[in-house]
Image 1: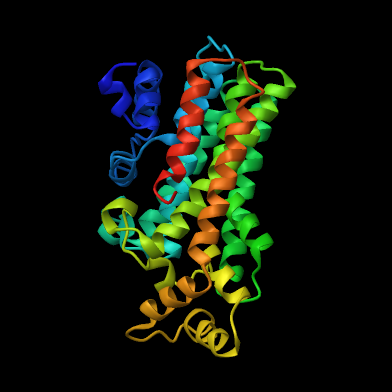
Image 2: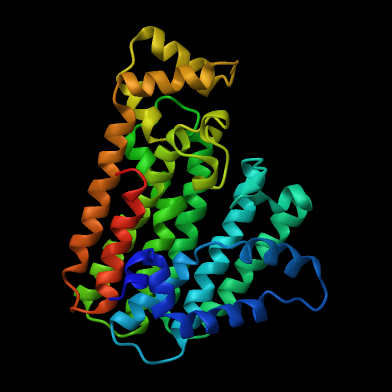
Length: 333
């Protein structure tokens, strides 16, 4: 490995290794986001898809398929499918969360309106189902259809769980599996299945995607209280202002005395936030070691992802996927 390559982030190395496949995915995405009758669709979609996201989910499909020896064309369709599902959920999420920034840029709902974001999101979901049918593999269709349902279920669960102090770590994990890990694990599992991998290899890649997705989301939750806007692509403290009961807060609430609990009830359940409340929340997280404990959970899931890969044959891509698990948690390690 040369010095230049050694300095590349794992997702960039993956992107370089899979560049021909990713070019095909990007071409297919551009082709399928076109609309003869509604020019608003490619406008809104391009704003998000061309915004410089890492394309991590489609790369996971491609990497899993190639790692398992796939030589056919349909991993490209599945990679485009997961990117469309992901983009549709982002469009809908930004409306639900009333977000103003995504990947460091104004959100589509801010530039256009909520109606456009919701309806274009619907269009992308429909497009994703057209794409996932094309390989003609019922098992892959089952994986991606189930993931789509899990994502929607997780979003609805989050509506009620996010501002309820009774939400525990078990419910939090269900939400995270819905909003993040379901698509990661569907990406890696579908890639393995389209390649005709063994049951053990399919399960290993599913477990890897699930654990990677959970680590990814937990890291996001930590960074919301301790990152920078440049790193996280949104404003520090957004989760707090949006009254989201994320893992650091769940841990702090579990350890809270009566006065601290009253504070959390006021700012999270009732949404009565005042100047200095974010600083007070950070002080409580520090007092109970909540961020450190949350970091430890992220590292646990990253380690689980790497362990799952050991069931797969030795391959450059296997090492890149292991490095990716380390990289996901490196920002908080």
